[in-house]
Amino acid sequence: MTASPARLATVTAIPVALVVGVLAFWLLGGFPKAAATGPVRTDAASMDDATTGICRALVARLPESLGGLHRRPVSAGPEQNAAFGDPAIVLSCGTVGRRAVPQDAQLMGLSDVCWYPEERSGETVWTTVDRQVPLRVVVPAKADGAWLVNLSAPIVAAVPFADPGTTHC
Image (cartoon, rainbow, N blue to C red):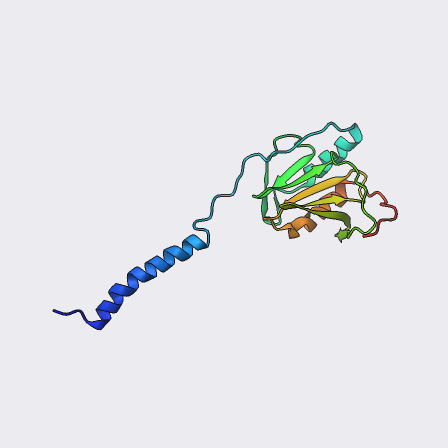
């Protein structure tokens, strides 16, 4: 008994399709890994009472989910730090020193908050230039930083405006 051409094609196509499917699955990253939910490493410096009060008010206003990224615990300074998503996007309040912004810096005004973005190896560091208490948000290259605008409402509500002087957003 000889195999029909249709049967021979089927017997050949099934293993080839399986190999191609497994290869494509592997090349596309396989099964997605579960997002990390553990504490994100942060530093906590001492702050004066006024700064501590402003930072606590800001952190208390932050939602549990921001732009689809879920909030995560921080290892230190929960009254001044917050983290969202995996890879973690970390907001630090009050522990950031005032930075001199270069004259030719490209500042970005996002919903009433003026930011100075700095590209660094594997991340973008966003620092406010128009708040009484400086804020920093570190966004890893693998994360989508477009949601940064979602921080504006809590920042505007909790952190008083400070005239940045000659710097314009």
